[in-house]
Amino acid sequence: MNHVLSGGDALVLMPTGGGKSLCYQLPAMARPGTGLVVSPLIALMQDQVGALQRMGVSAACLNSAQDGEESRRTCRELLRGELDLLYVSPERAVMPGFLEMLANCRLSLIAIDEAHCVSQWGHDFRPEYLQLAELRRHFPEVPRIALTATADEPTRADILQRLELFEAERFISGFDRPNIRYLIHPKTEVRRQFLEFYRSHHRGDAGIVYCQTRSRVDRAVGWLREAGLEALPYHAGMPSEERQRNQERFLHEEGVIMVATVAFGMGIDKPNVRFVAHLDMPKSVEAYYQETGRAGRDGLPATAWMAYGIADVMGLLQLMSRSQAPPERRALERRKLDAMLGFCETAQCRRQVLLRYFGEALPGRCGNCDTCLHPVEILDGTVAAQKALSCIKRTGERYGVGYLVDVLMGRDNPRIQKAGHDRLPTFGVGRETDAREWSSVFRQLAAAGLVEVDMEGYGGLRLTAASWEVLKGRRSFPLRQDPLARSTRERVRKKALPVRAPAVENDLFEALRRKRLELARGERIPPYFIFNDKTLLAMVESRPETLEEMAELPGVGEVKLARYGEAFLEVLRST
View: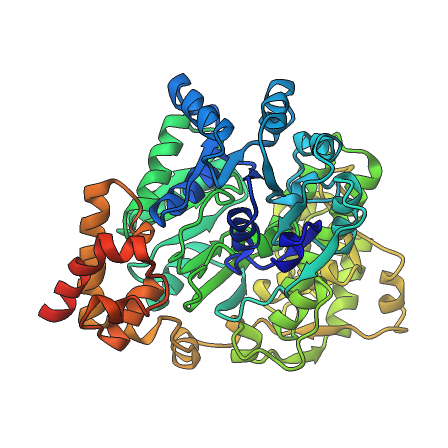
């Protein structure tokens, strides 16, 4: 903030919920003029503007969802110098007419949010962002600040180059979200796995469930509703009115689960999302980090849960094979996918691996991920790997995992007999191992780069140059034992630590939540616009008796104290 206040440019990387918005909001209010904020989504603009206005900040946005009179009123306020902050889309920010209007205003700073969108290597490429370097040429004396939660070193360099932030200072606060517990499981029965997780840890909590495709979103909503959960879909194949309605319910109600493709989430500032679940593996570590970062923005305990399998990898590779992107882009996406699979298959502390990917070190194990809570056993899997690799080679390097497992387990079926693979030396050599364990072997071979999926053909597995090192006995193969394959549900439940905040079950906390919901419905705003869970927990802990005492709590400013203080004091006195 001091750097921007003094007129310097900056690149800011902070984890979701880490306070990125404050880095431009407070300097914009302190410096003379209006802070221009470039934001990619209407929902994100509206959410931030609404929250600022309730805190007494003069903020507004210009977007296509507004009527003409509202837009004209905002423009008049801008020209009169009455706005502290103005939020616009990247498309509007570079419109000639809008730039002419800005030339008649005094700008305190220019903030470019979600700046990874400018990068050709970023995971959410937005072509419109490429034109934002024009702002430097029109307003060379105005400090610019680019902000994102997700960017590896190549993406950071690309942001600085494309936005022409040649003299910008980098501020990287760290990527760790210690309140998030990372739980990742091989996919077996994903419905049972998720429902068991939800009922054990997050019954009644708000959460986001991500799926790879629209059809999977719709199917997941169906079985979640059958299980009695309040689940809503969100994907690009739905009418925009229905998407907006579902998003409003998610923001305004308690305990709603949003089931979505990656189209959902960037514009959501809901602080009490207690879990983010992936029913399919994301395409990159960056995507995983950003999506899981939508949990626990209030700093209270939250969970990132995922089930993954080799079929997820094949599905993502198929999408890549149909891409029109240049070869170097597709090669990069493949490397990112390999890194994501390696993260899933690691036996190390998840948090250490995740932070290492972004160039950050964690000295010791975190104690708050599945591999720390349930240490993974590593066995010598060289013989199993040799059997699997030999089976791939002898069947012609053109079959998928299911078929290869059937051959290894000696299952007679017409397809195997027709191909003559029941006469191969590898037929039946893996009878002592069950199908789930063989699937794990193939998955780990792929993660280690010892097999690859042939996307030019029919998606079969084929050997790589490194495969022969294992086949010829020159290289051993460490095999990670899937914990759930050797543990009962009861054992997992017994070892699992609670992820809820201790006071969440408190009667007073629930009474405060009911009052918050009542007030929010009356004003037709999300409950967290009034006070977030962290503030309610502080009320439970400190039991303020006066407005002066309440004013000392986190998240209670002058405007909110005057508007809501007495209502919450009444609950505190009567409960």
